[in-house]
Length: 334
Length: 300
Image (cartoon, chains in turn green, orange):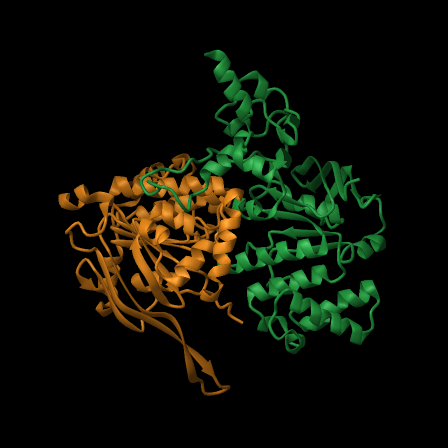
């Protein structure tokens, strides 16, 4: 049985204008020790998916239907107190901004030991000792000496390492990392990603990494979910997704990325995706990417919402015109 | 002028005169201490002896991490910040020695596109007023002709001119950045400093804006100083690239040379750090990264 199973999750936000369908029928599962990457652009619902799993959806949002099963038990019908026991102990969390997710008025040591004392009931000395070990584990030099420093004495990369140390304090089974390196410089990012990979293997921990950066998922994830307008549009293993992307959105997203290598980059134009994602107040009862899709037909795209179907073992796609079928069609027509 | 046109985006070393020559540019910010009487105890050397030139129709990419001094360099070029020392010669004249009124004249020829399309447009001005403000300030045309110019500019950047009377908050990041570009074009400048023009935008929108900047460059023979932290974005825009680290240019050269055969250790480490959207290259790149770790001392 998988560690995390999300089934047909729907999270809506009530606003004056109506209900925003931020997450609209998301399903996936994650095995122990594996890493799932969730990629998508702003507003696609990737962060709200993570918040829904942890029971942290801010009002006026709420999970309206679906199920989230973590380690064999549902997360959605639990009391607040039970969720607090799980978060920080069984599920670790890292957020985007290392500048704001640490309390500036408490020392680093206090913030790490807080978690240890709350969840593991360690006494002061034991917690301090463990905190030092954790800081060493995330490669903070002179860990014991820096325990009593306040966050402002740490650089951005080091603060994110502290966040990782806190998230790992109780040996969680699952780590949810929401844009963990977005606020960091690229060289610092590389260090943090390497650290996450190393710790994941050591602790045999599963990870959900949420990012807008295709490069970051390529480096970290075993499987990738691509989200668009509140839904999963493609789900495959990392190699399969990058080798043979099926959904026209995934294809376009990869093609729109400026390349670090290659020839004639200066003279060439980037492939851009015309238009914008749909309004999630009243999402169309059709393929949500159709208005921007260069392969969209008339009736099969505008009329019905395509289901997420398994086009080959382990590769799921929500489109009437996935790449391999277009290719087969082109051969057939000849 | 026709000479410049023919050479177009060809860039450096084609015999034409550089449009912009920056020499030994320094910008030090004082670090002050003291309660009643401020004493300057130290300086932050944001830009520390930077020299480069840009030829007409060329794009020079300025790439570096946060705090490397790339934006400060851009501001000093436009005299939005007064350099501590060094010279900035634009069209043969030293901008650092100019009076305010002379500078104002010169600013018609050099404009800027800012990073954040949310903060850089006045929320209380209409799109039309934002785009034509520079014309009004410089006393060009009357109200009606300025409005026509604004419509034409918006059309050029792919923004529907029917929305000329609306306010910036009604538009998405990508659309706002188009307004910002139209504003920069209003006085028909030669040089545009693009300061992280796409870093606030999603990938699909980013591609639209980068393509627009490329098209405009070709159409109006613009010269860009293109500042960004994203190495791939800089590569796709630039003829030549200068890499900055801690206030200094550590490497400068043709874009392809710098990326394919970097000579500086920091440039190598920077390139190796970029997560590439190709899982098959991952192992090689990680190995490369390990070797170059020494070139990067993480600031404490």
